[in-house]
Image (cartoon, rainbow, N blue to C red; front, side, top):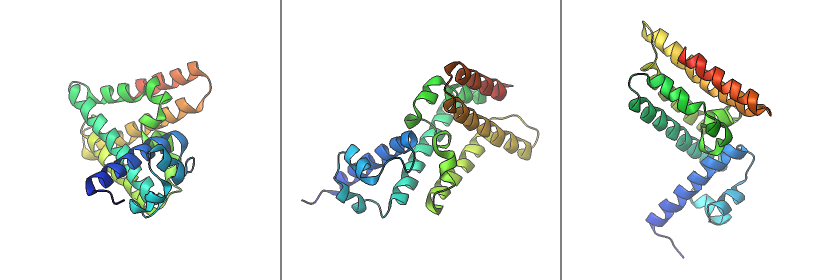
Length: 188
């Protein structure tokens, strides 16, 4: 039975949404195409009607997750015009974000894995990083464009690194201390 273009688009959307969450939860290699398709409510055989490879799905799912993070940064920053950077850091460095990697930042969940992916995935991440740095550079203090850009990169690295460390430890008190220290560093 042939599906309509609209249904095919909805199916593709379900696959990408499911993949974006599961990759952040389990890693790029932590879930296979068959299981992703099953979780999306579709058959494994239909995968190649939507994507030419798992790498193509990883790239699209990564782009989707990264665009969500960028949209959240923009929204949070706009809601707090007096101190948008602190607001973004406060929204990012939370125990909820730490405890729900499938709903959070792809870089904090999979940053080190991205370097082992192909050029399509790395391009999606690179494009996002440029956009995030550009956004943050508008929000950080600095006398020159170069100084603001360096501060933006440093701030984003602090956010992502803090989240990675907070997730890595098995001591909840230490994890919270890491989140608090990262937040204090960005707000300083």
